[in-house]
Length: 225
Length: 271
Image (cartoon, rainbow over the protein chains, first blue to last red):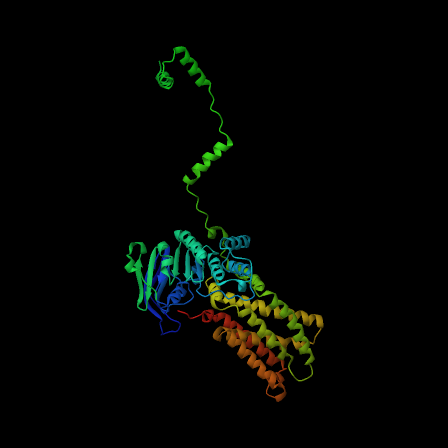
């Protein structure tokens, strides 16, 4: 269960890489991705989630390029985007049921799985437009967890959460990180630092693997701008 | 004297602070032999279990993926198709159910005016498709595209629900109202032509641009009806061959869009 970035270059147009020469390796546990604002953390996560093809290099999951069979890779993937969900005229439950079908959850299990996650994440059965930003963020997490993924990618998951929601997210991430890989971008690493098994710091020149935060001195902690 | 007897005699001597007689000791040993351990009460058993519970490791819950997932692509596609119909919501269904009969009656009223009845189809198609495709953007689209489906399946599902509904309702109206057969081909041709155009534009330029361009093309043609520059008023517009070509072009645009399905273009570019 290892995700490898091997000299990856990323960009939205050919010939214009936003990020180049990205190399790192992450296995089971929670890995925090930090770095200055606008450096490309979301771009890196999109590439890891197979939403963006690399311009060069390879992204491997379980030793195989994720683009060799992207559909097979996505069976093991859960992704929480940075932006809040914009779903006009749709109820949270209907949207989760739809995604549960897309994720291949059997008919008999679908409703119970959706109900279970809605209860665990305290999501009301309402139209998404009526949700607060924090609830939308929890809805995105519920969607990502539907298929109980082996690789969970979270883009700034704490941004819109209040203190109690952050506490609950920490508890859940701690539980989830025990048997899967979680790659989580954050501009406030202190919030999740004590849970992290690894720490990746992104610069315009590539990724610096800061290793296990528990083994670092405070002066080594990367600071986001 | 057996070692057990000796030990009990010693314990009792310590307990009562004097030596027991052989007779008393025999009596005590006989009573001990006959003594039956009392059965524990339910309360005392529950108390013991409760005290032991923290010491027993909790069983790890079974991972959901083991039991709840099916990897049949056809199953996934068909199920998602059914649920997409629900996602469109009441407004879409009521709007479509009202717009189609109105459009159909308007088209009938154009018979014999020299204007192709197909001119009524595009606005219905454009609005219907955009309602279906607009939610396919931003964060929600990103989540859909990280599901184990081909992006073309997501796109095809939305298109099938929207265009399929128009076709079925149009067919029903044609049967119920007994309209002339000449209406069917131009309507269907316009339906597919504008479906293909809107879909292609949505993929390459975004939904709002698609709305503006498709509505602009139709608006220009609509305004041009009385000024002799509208294709819908051209003398050859009613020819079946022309309508079949339009139908073919529409189907071609749809096939091209689904085959290419560059849905990732609709994603944001934030850093």
